[in-house]
Length: 363
Ligand code: HEC
Ligand code: HEC
Image (tube, rainbow, N blue to C red; front, side):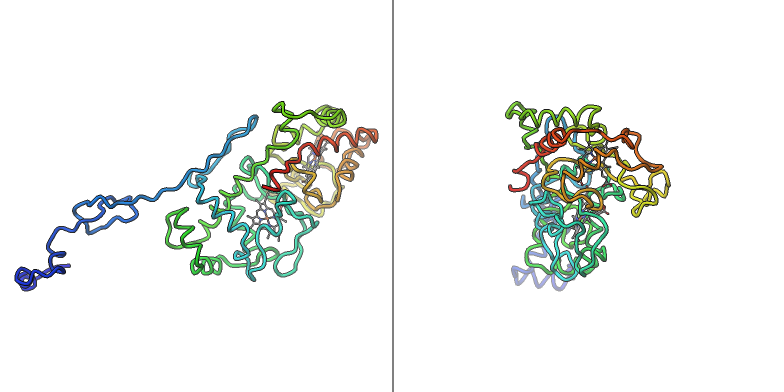
């Protein structure tokens, strides 16, 4: 406020408190990066408050590579709390009755027990909802790898007409006028106005914490549990040329961050998979290798949920699979089959069940 000479004189005579304020150099917080920075303040009164979040410590499990976390979206306790709330909240859907968790149900390793999920308008898709496990170590998302980050992925379901069928404008309006969300976003990101960017950032932070490494097999690796002879034999089949599963479902993540045609169909394919994304015919019929962790919980199986049990999956591989021009060279037994005995098939399933982590679906 500019004081003219008359006001100044009046102030000197009257010495009102309002005038005093105007005359004395304003004191307040003078640090630009403080949340209560006062642009008019000249003298710092020590009142500066700084925005801070609590880092969320991710413990990298033994045998896992480092998790790649985007530099602009570090995982914080505040962000994860917010992300989980958003993941579980139907507020993101057009008619307020569908949340991410409806199609990615915790008890089913964050997948859908139905072959195809039903969206808010009662329309079904053509792919089985993926289980969400150890996503922080995945490089591509969706069965066809159409997106490359969890942040990017989370934009999709909200506006997808056969999923939550909402608009981001509507989501922003609902969140900004909500009684809790503005404070939660402020705490996580120090923002005054909520928009889609921060919604997907929070959800991605939460998704990176969905880590499963406490199965019987993990305990076996840590020397805390023994495998039964059947489980052990299944492990040997899985990990040798006999079953040949490890080439694609290898490492402790039980996936290879890649795409293959595992011989489900002959051509023409009803779903081109990776080929739809790359436009390259040699990618047709290739899909993302899913992790086999918690596979016992996440039936039905394959991108289109065509198999309802692990027995059916094993029968598929045991048959050797179907020939097509893009079938993976690692599907070496096409036309011959793996020739597993009934006991060996049961052993393989027993091994797959050692990858079940009860803590992951209950805690
Ligand atoms: C109507 C059911 C439905 C809803 C609601 C839904 N999803 Fe999905 N989700 C799916 C289906 C189906 C797929 C597989 C899509 C594909 O491959 O084309 C999928 C795939 C994913 C993937 C990829 C996983 C991977 O390993 O590649 C992630 C991550 C994901 N969803 C997160 C979310 C989040 C976050 C929300 C909420 C904002 C959400 N989903 C809401 C059905 C749903
Ligand atoms: C050439 C690579 C490759 C080999 C070898 C392979 N798989 Fe797969 N597996 C895949 C791919 C890719 C998918 C997803 C295919 C799809 O949905 O179209 C898959 C899917 C699965 C699924 C269903 C997962 C889900 O979430 O729906 C199971 C279970 C499975 N494989 C087990 C095995 C077993 C057991 C073996 C060994 C007998 C094996 N796989 C060998 C690549 C492979």
